[in-house]
Length: 313
Image 1 (tube, rainbow, N blue to C red):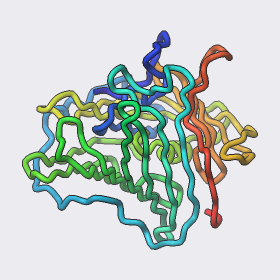
Image 2: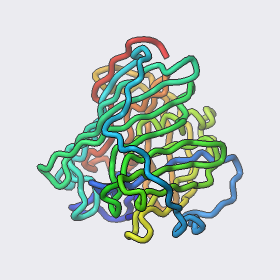
Image 3: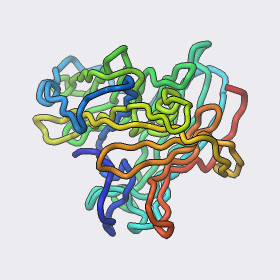
Image 4: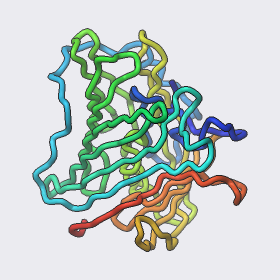
């Protein structure tokens, strides 16, 4: 399954959110990669060298939950997906998710970074509760260093956890499994810095925003990498798309019952709706919303609904 931005006419069953094609249970990953200025790479460029050549290695011991850092607590919060149309569903027919919430705790890992632990709660199908835990390592400027997802691939029911490390010019992912024959690794060439849009979307947006030029209306090229899950022979297959992010200035908004003087950005990928996002001074995503041409469009956005800061960062 391909994660894409939805576009065109509105369906009663789907959302215009960029994560509208995510299927749960299972894991589909979309990665945002900030590219160097002046990149001439084409839209929707396929990484064909990775499509059928994941290699198998011995599985690692299964882990049931993330290990929480012993560092001091910096902040905690909660995101929710608001979808007032489509009956509250996000996703394509027969794969929708409902009532999505993500809670997280940010701690200092050391002088050079942070650790984030969290849990996503949702229904898929509707009225069938699901939970997914995750762990993230961040640099001092909120760039993603490593990610661990306690979820399963659609075509590998014994898979998990998924671990990814962000290396210079390369994203290295290990898809663990109880059965060593089902475990494999994948390397995807990237242009630093990079980060996941989903499933750790809020803090990946923070990473991309840090990389954007803070000059009004000056675009910064970005790449979008989608991890498809086409079939059992090719359980994971990457695809690359190009786009750009623009800084639009500061704007006063309200999120998590607080007022913020937020940095506003616009993210655009060819043939897909533009996304608007508002970031706090510290780099916390406050609101993410598709940009619609009409004012009466049903509300749909990812929003910070709870936030508490325990120390400056």
